[in-house]
Image (tube, rainbow, N blue to C red; front, side, top):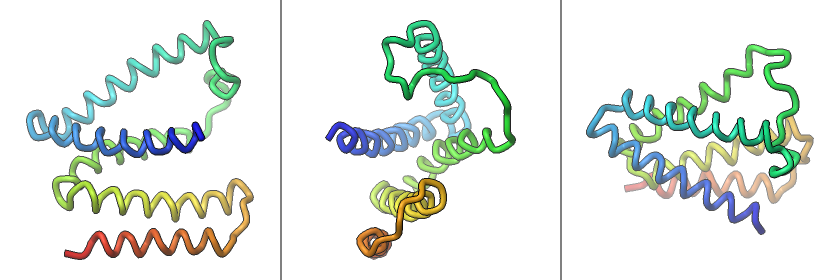
Length: 147
């Protein structure tokens, strides 16, 4: 129940972030909006890191630091790159196609990407319900794109 509520909150937060970044971009430009986002994320994540590092007992095991700056692989930078794509792309696309079409497309991409990730990385099986859900998402994208 809590996990489902969190997914709804995160979806709403993505819309708010994109819409507010669009408003900031109209005043400052998208590059300045991206930099502001990165500064805020860096400051908050630094505070969070210090709290978890020095008070691990206050946090669930999943949030505790396992090994800070251990062995590094080149692909560790990809999540940050994808985050930048989201922070930059969402406000631009809201202006171009509107929030509804953008987020239906985004969620459709997440459903298809999540399906493929679960299949290849997490070992979840392919079921007719999962395939049907992915197809419905694509149909929903098509319907919301119609004028």
